[in-house]
Amino acid sequence: RRDMKRVAKRIRKGELLLNDPSRSFVKEGDLVKRANTSGRSVKYRFFLFSDVLFYTHKSSAGDYKIHEELPLHMLKITDKFTGAARKTNRAFLIRHPRKSFMVFAADEKNKNDWMEAINVAVNKEMERKARLEGARLASSAVER
Image (tube, rainbow, N blue to C red; front, side, top):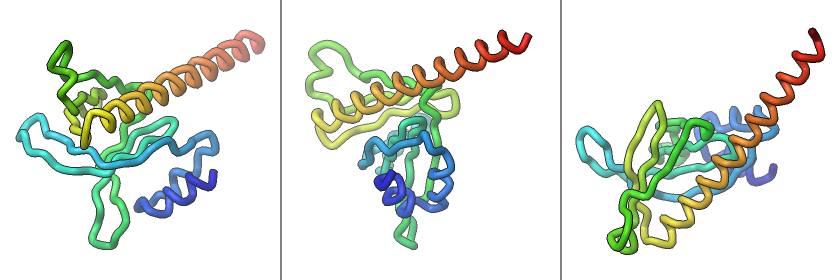
């Protein structure tokens, strides 16, 4: 919870992140995002929480302004390359109904760390959503 408060202070309107008591901070760091349309590459600060991935840019005020919010239950990541080419690459795809794009990590270890953290967070969020839905269905069956 202390990490959440520390991180929320650095994000513009970050106090809203604290509204969900089940949300926790997982990871933050810089990744270079390549735009699908223009092919332009821009460095963003990514913040991974237990239920959402944000990418932000540093404002002139020194805080991080949210560029996009991607709920994890609809997010998928895939390694951009397979086979031998994958070993030398630091790119992976982030796919979401709202936005899909390629990101580049500083190196392969950083890429693997991000991919693992995102996959673990997505899986935990999907399990949490399934438990909530199961509880909702069970309570509605009892009410009948």
